[in-house]
Image (tube, rainbow, N blue to C red):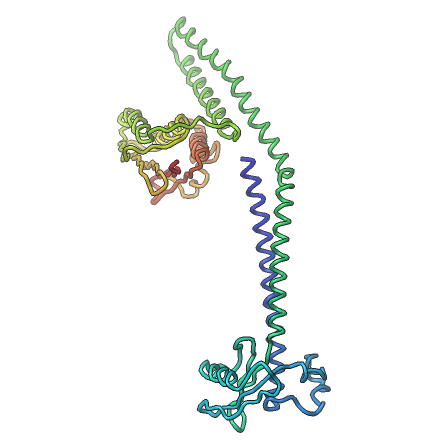
Length: 411
């Protein structure tokens, strides 16, 4: 249990950090990319105003209405690489202006222009060139601005952020591996003390309970059976069962204790347990049926799995009304073994299902002893399933029946 808590702590911390870093990286990448587009569109708008050329006067540099510092830079015409293509309304190329770029020839410019005419968009990217389509008196002018350097800088920024984030995640993971043990240590110590107390107290209670039970037999032999002796014997049995269940749960929680694993027939075990409950079922006017696939074997703790089947059948028997039905199914499903116990019941709320496997939880909140349970049976079943690396869950279709399903891996 402590190991699982430690793993969950590390997983939760790493997932939280991963989400935060991812969100930060996305925000940085989007804002940076948007800045590249905004700067390019501003330059393209200036070029479009002058039909594909920068103004030859300095008036635009001193325009106080311009909020972009690049437009006020005297170096802008010299540091910008751009070209333009003039086309007719039918898409025929009239002329190309390639005087401000060396990486593009007339044929490439024509291909870019035709591609944009097919797209029928007014702006966007083609390769690393940002383009703007504008109408002029002489035709359709497409202006291309080389954004390769800016986009390369943006890609480097994203790559650097990714590397830094990965390194940061690895460093935090190593720190959590070191610190998580100290974080869960107080809880581990308290949990260990709790288990030790339950085990020790259980063993200490066994002796007086055994003595009381023996004394009741002597008293019954001397004075005959009466309601007081019967009541003491009944309550002693309940105390003994509760003590044994607590000790069983405590032992199952001890991860350092390895159960004796053997290969055995789960089909035969389930069939045997179903047969043992046929008598109580008939006595209670309940129908118990089984659909058990033969020759299903599993490697596991036979005692724990026997207790699992017994607990599930006992739980179904307790909460099925007279005239109700119980069914047990055991099948192979791909690489899993599916054990399902179904029973009809007077009512069960879906809200109770997620708590059925909690210790001391009972759907009857009055906690009367009419069913003779303590809310530990299904907890023991869950512990047995977990010790075999399986899964157990409960479901109901109409809140008038209960289906408990166990999935065990095929070893």
